[in-house]
Amino acid sequence: MSLAYELGPPQTADYREAEAIIFKWQADLMLAMTIVLVALLWTLPGSHPPGRLPKYNPERRSTFSIADSEHVCLRASAALHIRRVIEIGRWIDKAAINTAPRKNDQDWLDACL
Image (tube, rainbow, N blue to C red; front, side, top):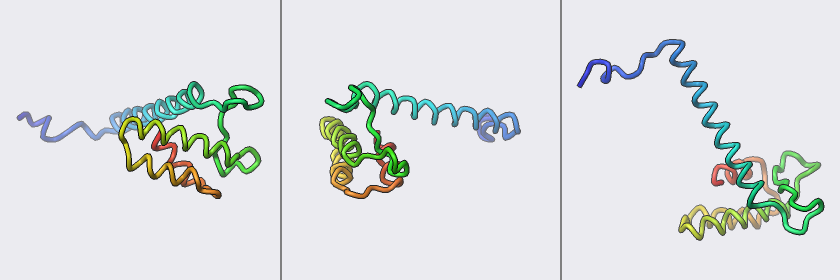
């Protein structure tokens, strides 16, 4: 085993900056993937305008819709149950019937997506 491997990557400012950039890029990519998934697969049927994205962020009280939150939960739950991710699917089933979700609940749901 080489000494370089045992010591790990260099801990220089440039390395830490590159690591932070990569982490941010990964986070941005996951957010973009979530947005695309919701946009392509989970638009609201029969809504006005057609294909409207769900408004399920409870911190945005002016646009939040409990029906939209339920829609996202039910779609996510169904997808997880099909893939046999049962425990998370059950948690989302419970989230779907939550009549007063908080931002933390939405963050957990987003993490599951």
